[in-house]
Image 1 (cartoon, rainbow, N blue to C red):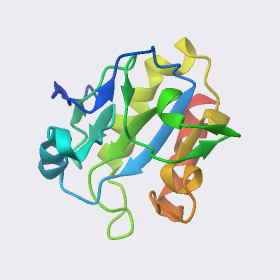
Image 2: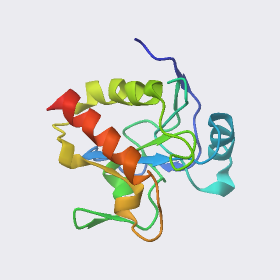
Image 3: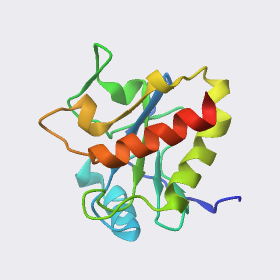
Image 4: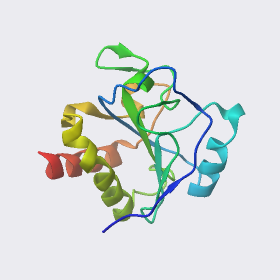
Length: 158
């Protein structure tokens, strides 16, 4: 099923260097889809994702893949600091502790990953969530939802 994708540019990114596109860091927003998009439009928030996925699977592209979105903050992945420069940021609208990801969100995320997976030479080891890159500071995704998403990614792309 093709998923609706809208372009809602965020000012909260850097184009000073090209994004390395070595993998993906998944997040949840806690806020609603509309509330998240409004926050991402606010320069004072200094935060954005590359893409946000609504409960119905609609995707909002906020920052182009080749630019650096400010989504991970102080974080480390596979021994490297500042994952913003090498992990694309994908967020699911909502709170994965309050409600699980919808099937539409998971399917839309897999659809978003598909053209990037082989183009960028990704593997499951290139996928993570915010909780793992910023332990003790961030808690998204919930462990149960990360395990579920990770299993679906592995099933689809391995």
